[in-house]
Amino acid sequence: MKTIFRNLAEKGKHLKRSLADLCLPCRCLNCNEEIAYSRVLFCHKCFEKIEFIEEPICNCCGSVFSVGKSHICGECLQQKWYFTRARSLVIYNEIVARAILSFKFGGKKEALKTFRTFKELSGMPEDIAHADFIVPVPLHEKRLRKRGFNQASLLALSFFPKEKDKIKNTMLFRKRKTIPQTGLDGSSRRKNIKNAFWVKDPEKIKGKNIILIDDVFTTGTTVNECARVLVKSGAKRVDVLTLARAER
Image 1 (cartoon, rainbow, N blue to C red):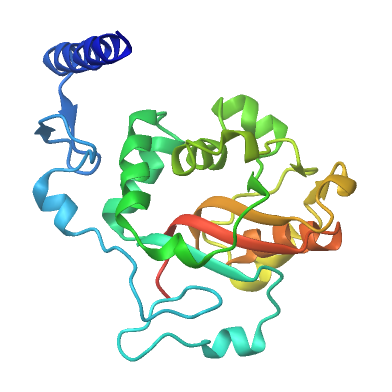
Image 2 (spheres, one colour):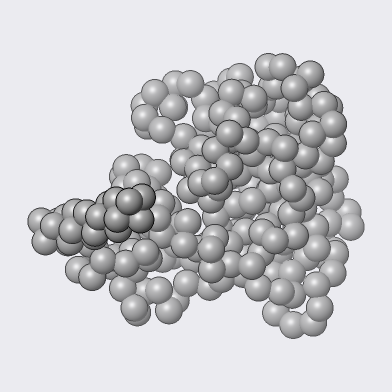
């Protein structure tokens, strides 16, 4: 009996999806070309231009090497990172940027199923630590009210649909509003984000492994400051997972 109901429910989902496609056809997140229903909302030409991150990479920050084997990059030998490892799914190129911007600022949450598929297709997150908690990089409350959602929180739900109980949106807070990091150099980014975050209840994270979620790893300034605050509050380890990574 359960199997019958399950089959009926599945057929209902397909019917609902087909009707939705007839009324509101899917469109490519980059070029807006009409496409058939897909787990990836990109046309064939645009999808071919998306670069999934593969080894060789830096074992620490996840930057991509063109040849050779994975190893620690020169920057990580000099840079003080508070996270253990950072991994990203795809390279941040113009096509990925347009999809992320339409999601963040255009409210196109249908892009989330594409981002989830990116994680399913990518092998990069396999070497990050088992998480006790999954923590999205927080928005300031004023920006959250204006946007209506935290993109990092939705990405966390999309990446870890079976671990919703581990996702903690009220563990890390942004205590002051900062200007957007886009366009700032490394020094300005660090100054802008310094002491912008705080942990409400440090006792809950003592000795815990945490995966920190954000949309883009550019210089690593934001996630590193978040990791610093988490480690200072007692976290055993912080790994970073972002949707995309900007090339150096």
